[in-house]
Amino acid sequence: EGQYNFAGMHRIMDLLGEVNIKVVLGTPTAAPPIWLAQKHPEILPLDERGQRRCEGTRRAYCVNSAVYWEHSQRIVRALAGALGRHPQLIAWQIDNGLGAHNTAASFNPETQRDWHAWLKAKYETIERLNDKLGTRFWGQTVSQWEHVPMPRLTTATHNPALVVDWMRFCSDTLVTYARMQANLLHELTPDIPVTHNFRALSYDCDYFDLAEAVDFVAVDTNATIKDRAAELACEIDLMRSLKKNGIRSPDGDYGFWVIEQKAGHVDWQ
Image (cartoon, rainbow, N blue to C red; front, side):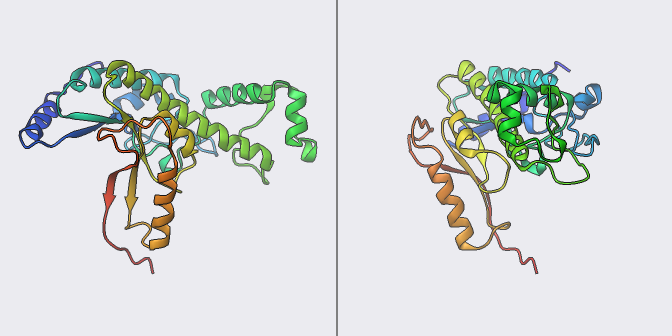
């Protein structure tokens, strides 16, 4: 903990500079180190059953965790301080695949705290929440913000209005986390634009909101996952429309970048 060694990355970027290859660096926050999860198991996400998901892979963190936010800021600051002025660096990519592997939602105590604060900011009074969500049905009426449930596993379906609000809250949470990293990188390296690898129609996040948090849009395109031309065209049309104003890309283009590409064909039958 607290020990950083970027010598290997610096050497690789130097070598790339010798052949005039520019670099987009990703912040490593999509894959928390195992020692961090073992020291702070509270960063691991709880699923809708209340079961803790284990460490040892990517996206093994709760986006609402204050501990993980603190450690994310530490590594971003260290990375920017070590490599932010390297002549080959032309852009940052924050995290990787926000919301992937069904991690847009977690059900940790800190998530519940933020969920209730989000509802309070939206509805202002508990009476208005009950009215707008139609909580009289199935005995859902609440008298305190802390009584509003997260849509965890239960016997029957949750109130659909509550579920929609929950999805909006989870999206806002991801966007806020992305904006935290983007703002930090803008502060530390103001001349280097920031992006994220968007994957259209895949994750539970409002990509129009997420696009506002970054300087330009970059795309994951995976022909191995969706091989129909119409599906790929739909994704590209969505990506093209995400950000129309305030675009700042390394090459000055107002379109979008393809930052991750998988080629090939998979027969699912």
